[in-house]
Image (cartoon, rainbow over all chains, first blue to last red; front, side, top):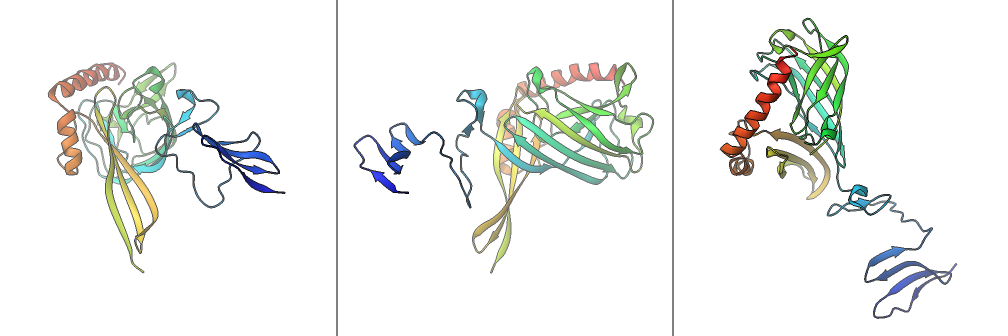
Length: 195
Length: 89
């Protein structure tokens, strides 16, 4: 096996293996030959300025964001936002491109003072297009009064979703004024597209 | 060996039709001047939301983008949503 540097010209140069180009540098950038992989053994690829194209070079192929983090989920009412004392407010998210996958754990120590339908906050504003309508699955609930939440319906263009329950053939909003009490708890797995 | 934790507001973005403000707080664990760990915490400020306790830079963004026109448009949007939601309560 012989690695060599091909004599560069004013416009191009390359690194060769056994006489064949492996890495070429020219005015368009750096190109790896077909069949050659780029391996980063102990460092990360920094594409923070523009992202990475996967599967094509259209804007729909550009992965330009990845982020992991936390947020503080809250409940509020649509008529009166209200407030509550929270024993637990845990929220974590992963954002891959526009897609947000989040989970949260909310535990109230007492009754929420909000009125109207029950909103839960999100870490990012949802897309204003119809594809922004994400949602959430309730993975745990306890100590709700009457109908507790069965799911969260996403809403386009805002930073919250609605906790709702399955009313047989349709769905219905929780009435926050009467829905909570001591130790009301909900856990959600949330999935939607960000603006 | 000195280890310290620093928190900074490292990203403030204006997002969507109603100029929601995305705020990202970065927490770095720094050992002898080298960042050894970073975590993010996020929140969103809607046009109708109090921002008086936010970082000065965030307040400035809210004041710039949450104009009365934007607040009114968002209030109208929420009222329309609320009417639909309350019909289901």
